[in-house]
Length: 116
Image 1 (cartoon, one colour):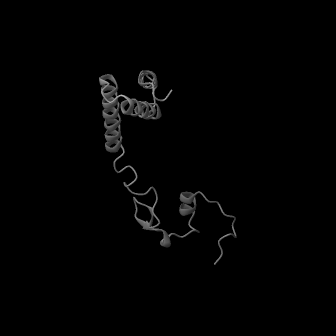
Image 2: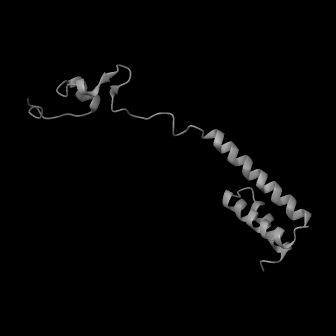
Image 3: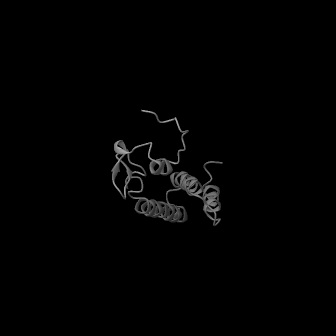
């Protein structure tokens, strides 16, 4: 029954009670508590648990924001400008006939593969 405040409160507690509760469990518990708060806005227990879960959610989001800040903006893994950043040799100046370059690129062409 969606209007039973005590049932919604208990279900919210059950969702966040286990140590393995996930974000979707907390979000579902918040939804249950919001429904319970609409039915019984004077219920102190519902309000306290709802406030605690919202604070926990905001804290976790803030932690994740700082943890992953700039994670995808730190640069690229490869560059089309240089072949080897240590030597800063442009790709256009590499000679594919050079055995050293072939070893670097891990290619082993046949003897007549690179003809002028």
